[in-house]
Amino acid sequence: MSNSYPPTLPVVIFEHSNKFVPGGQCDCDCDCACGLSTATSFVFDKSVLPRIPELEAASFSTIKLNDEYTLCFGPTCQPTVVNHPALDLLIGLKNHQHFSLYAHLSKIGGEICAAETIQNLVQSGLLTLPHQTLEASPHTLTAWLHTTDRCNLRCIYCYLPHRPEDMSKITGDETIHTLFSEASRNGYSKVKIKYAGGEPLLRFETILGWHELAAQLSAELHLELEEVILSNGTLLTPEIAASIKKHGLRLMISLDGLGAAHDVHRHFANGRGSFEQVSLAIVIAQQAGLSPHISVTVSTQNAHSLPELVAWLCANKLHFNLNFARENLYYAENGDQQILIDGMLSAFEVIRVNPPNESILAGLVDRANLAVPHLRTCAVEQDYLVFNARGQLFRCQMEMSGNPVTTENKNILNSFRRHSNPINLPVNKKGNCKTCEWMYWCTGGCPLLTYRLNGRSDVQSPYCAVYKSLYPESFRLEGFRLLAKYAEQQ
Ligand code: SF4
Ligand code: SF4
Image (cartoon, rainbow, N blue to C red):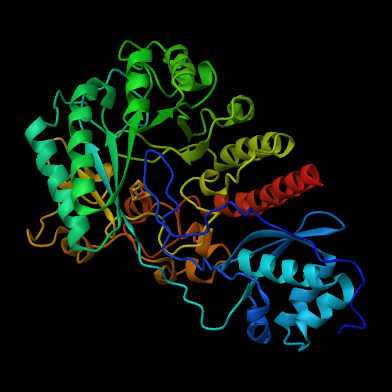
């Protein structure tokens, strides 16, 4: 092997700061879960030399980026760009061509090069030790607190009937106590609360009270706490933004386009568009020192305008995720899926020429998390509790117009996990998905949408064809982003 090996040094490029760990949840107006991880902390020093012969090449797929570089990605490694020598090395190991890795690398680049290359390959997950654990226990219990049904907007894809109903202070307090006791009893290390509505800023003062209680319980029970307000942005003032910042809360704002492309989705009850107020809210939030997460809902009505929106988001250094509009009791998406594909691919082109500093794979294509391999699309029925304004429990916020889940008082999560009609199957239980090359990143899409449209959960998403068109391009985009960053550092 070493004789045929080109004498060029191997290059391995990946996101060192990327947290390749379970629970990579974003601040979107939905939920996500990441149950698989192979995070490893292999630190190279001479004492690990005897273990190097045990290292194996992980299972990975490749996407060619140009004549020199290839992107590798797989269920146990993070997206990593390698040059020819590094790829040849991995393929050699994959094909069980036994050779002394360290001696070989030392010969072509010296001992420092050998150590760095091996460490990089291990940290990216492309080299693994045998029997490395794939399953990691989830550590975050997420709750959706439906603070009010009221909203000043009438977005076309909203799944709520907009009744004038608020969560009372007492109900919210009880809900937070329940949440923390469930988290503590079930061994979680972190609680994440999403304050949602309706429009939660209509309840901002009350939310601050719930935040105080959550912070107190978090300290008492030694549970980490993360809180995010999911807002339409129209009611944000400099005072509220400053208070959100002061209390350490996060903010998500929905923005679906620039101008008319946003207004076609999101308008006030009187029909007037909300873009002006929402774009102002983003400025206010940034001036207050917040980094609002922007949630973009994509439908066939606004897909054509995604390139302009994405260019604006990149220029303003805003984190965002692109989600497809979900069908519900009040909204049906009957458009041509090719419109979605075309709009998304045009947006990707914009990202390609303005590569962001950080990976955006976690939120680029609907509910897929392309950054972290996992088994389920979201934490529904597992690590996720949705409380409506009356404190009743649901699996997903989009089921709140139906009947609540009947729970065992002793252990609410058990009731969810033993639901008589489970919808959120792991991807390896979904017929077409379990042989799909994208299974560990896609995991079959939103399980509720699949169930609603097909009457069963063990099949692929209605967006499957869209996903399959977009996933390779998403990974290619990440490859080019990594290459651009690497070039900057040279
Ligand atoms: S929904 Fe389609 S793309 Fe996604 S895992 Fe299933 S078969 Fe693959
Ligand atoms: S079931 Fe669908 S809508 Fe509900 S949390 Fe999961 S991905 Fe989101």
